[in-house]
Length: 260
Length: 268
Image (cartoon, rainbow over all chains, first blue to last red; front, side, top):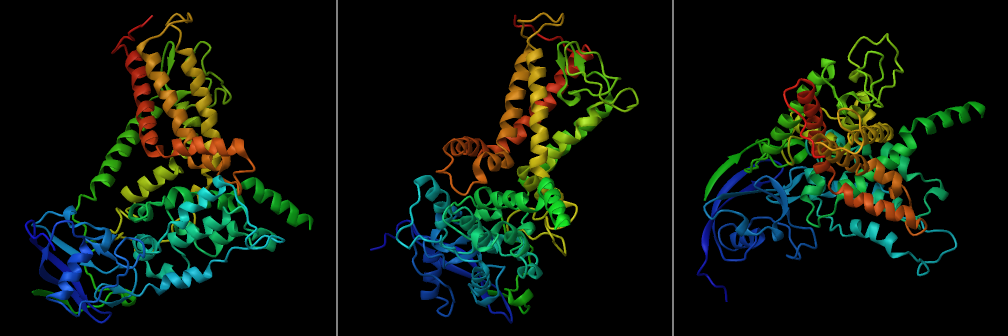
């Protein structure tokens, strides 16, 4: 039974609408101690706005479904405690701005799946069958951090490269998928290079690493606290510099090409 | 239930939200503080670099003027006088090599974040819309030059070695007798520790030490070095500011001694 002794009424401003039109609507909803934004949104659905669209699943910060912008900051609704906000504050909840809105708080995150398909998959080493892969702990740990990603796409949403410039969506994979490239390039068993796939060159030429200006918003919003910029994007920039911006390598290639 | 509907559509089917951002916190504070801090340093460093005076008070030489590569440099006994540029250089000798540490900081991953956010508003803060109509990031000239960071890292390491030599020289008194220490010696020692910590914590150093490897387990020594640099790298922002401040303070200290505004308290 819910203890309502510490309940209060919260003021919410929720964006409602679809791709055609929409705007912020004001609501007053009861809040109980220990609740998160998603609980309050569900109460709103159960009381005043039964047709309010919201995507959610696990309520435990692991499925990455309930991303929204709360007071202008991308967050998971299920991991944002109401106690973060003053009881008399008006809390504004809007859909993720970077993606097309479907309805109310639900957006079409298909852009991310398109980008995911463009990342060349892990290339298994020749002569080693699945189940025979062996890796030392220090090698596992490095990419383990990136495997914590729950694909909530908050980093993709907050990245100003596509958030403020729709036209860059074609050329830029976004932090989540540049991190995927880093994970594969750092994988000691990935045999891409032997198969003629140069991930270090591809990350710049095909996936737009150069658009990233390392302002770290992806790291700031990551609910899994993955150090996306420091551990994935900057190391990839350095690896790309090995390939594309090293003047000695450039000179060597120039001489070799001339000889050929 | 009150309604504030806006019959508008957003770009490419996005939610129609007219405001540039909906943040209520003081998101502008960090970029504003960065502008103030960096501008203060730029103004001070420009004045001192062009001053061409009051940069040596035995046994201390200002880090802005070391190494001193022109004939016109003050005579610093056993100090960093290497007149490679001869007597034709008429400007302040600080201007000869300052491009190297400046380039190192300008292309540093932390400073890039700092000036992109605070000076270029790209973006000013997370989820706050930037004012620019187009954005090409570091894909084109001139910002593509930021990829040269590691070469400035090599140069900065050489400069740090020279500043280490200068710090060793501060263990003398004003008559050049060894085995003495003054308040300036302490200041210079702290400064060089911070300069090395900032230089070694750099992301390029982390990459060179072991970050570029595909397999750590095959290179245990480099893995160890990478682990140590990674630990330092976590404090890169703090070290960037602390070393910037200590460089300016060391220079100011020499300036005060050289203009007789202050006397170096001797410890022994």
